[in-house]
Amino acid sequence: MIPRYTHPEMGRIWSDQRRYETWLLVETAAAEAMAAAGIVPADAARDIRERGAFDIARIEEIEQATQHDVIAFTTAVAEKVGPSARWLHFGMTSSDVIDTAQALQMREACDLILKDLRSLAHAVRDRALEHRHTPIIGRTHGVHAEPMTFGLKLALWFAEIGRDIERLERARETVSVGKLSGAVGTFAHLPPAVEADVCRRLGLEPAAVASQVIQRDRHAELLSVLAITAGSLEKFALEIRGLQKTEIGEVEEPFAKGQKGSSAMPHKRNPIGCEQVVGLARLIRGNCQAAFENIALWHERDISHSSVERVILPDSFIALDHMLRRFTRIVRDMLVLPERMRENLNRLRGVVFSGTVLLELARKGVSREQAYDWVQRNAMLSFAEQRDFKGLLRSDTDIARVLSPEEIERAFDLGEQFKHVDTIFERVFAGVESVV
Image (cartoon, rainbow, N blue to C red; front, side, top):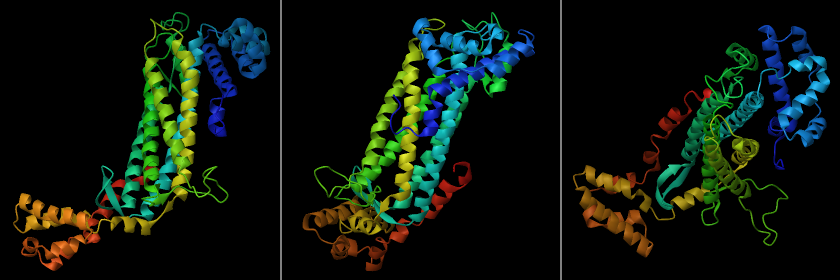
C-alpha cells in the first residue's frame, strides 16, 4: 500500500503503471535493436513500437492463471500487437526486462531525490547565512562547552548535504545499468551487441557481466546511500528537537495557525515533524539491511530478492522523498530565538570562557597544570555559589597577579571567539552552485 504521505511525482515512479511502462520501453527497445541487427523483421519491431500497449486489469487477470507477472504482461501486450507479437520478448528472459526496467525507475527516483536534496541545501544555506554571527552556546556531552554561532550548526548541515548529493550521484551511476544476456548471462540467444544497443537507446550502461540478474551489490550500495542520507536528516531533526526542549527553547519547528499539539494539553507545541523524520530514518536503515541480504543468491539466480525489492525500493524512496520535503519546509520556516540563545549562553555566568582564560595564563608563562587549577577552582566556586565567573577571576590573587583586568575582560570577548567564522563560511560555501 502506498503511504498517504507519498508525493505524486515519487508515487508515479513506483506505480504499477510506470513499472509496466518501463517494461514496455525495454521490450520495444529490444525489438528495435534486434531489427537493426537483422534478428527480427523490421515491420515486427514497428508493430511493437506502434501497437504495443497494456491494460493493467487485463495483466492482473492473466496473472491469476499464469502466476507469472512477466508472462502475464507479454501476453497482454501481445493481444494488442497482433501477429508480430511472436517477436516480442524474443530471446529474452524475465530478468532482462525486470532488471533493466528497474534501473530506469531507480534512476528516475534518484533524480527526484537529488532535486529534493538541492532544495534542502538551498534552504539550509539561506538560514546559515542569516545566522552566521548569531551567538549560541556549543554543547558537548549535552553540557555547555564554548560559544559558537547558530549559523555554524547550519553550515555543518550544508556540508553534509553536499556529501549526500555526491554519494547519491555515484550510486545513481552504479545502478544505471541494463542486461539482456539471457537466462544465465551467456548471451546464448542474443549477441552482446543487441544488449549494448538497447542500453544505448535507454541511456543505460550494459553490465560487463551478469548472471540471470544484475548483481545486487549495486542495489545495496544505493540503499546504503539512501540510509546515510536519511541518517543525515535524522541528525539535523534531532538537533532541532533538542533545541526545542522547554528548558532550552532556542529553536522551534513551525507551528501553523490552527495546528494542535496534544489532544489532552492545549498548550503543547510538539516537534512532530522532526520526530517523523527521525522515525522514518529507522525504516530506511532497516530496508538497507534487507538490501544487504539480497546480495547473496543461489547460483545464477533465485527469486528471494524479488519480493524484498518490491517493498524496500519504493518504500525507501517514497519515505526519503517525504522526509526531505518535510524537513525543507521545517528549515525554511523554523522559529529561531536569538535572545533565548544569548540567555542560555550567559546562564552559567561566564564559565564557558574558561578555556580562553586558561590559554591567556599559559601565554603569560604559567604552566598549563597550574593555570588549569586556578581557573577550575573559580569555575567550581561559580557553580557552587552561583557567582559571576569574571568577578571571581578578578578577585583571585594568583590570577590577578598575572592577568590585568583588561586582559581578563578580553578573554570574554565573543568577537575573539568568532574571528574565524567568516573563513569557515568561505570554505563551506565556496563553489556552492555545484550543490544547490
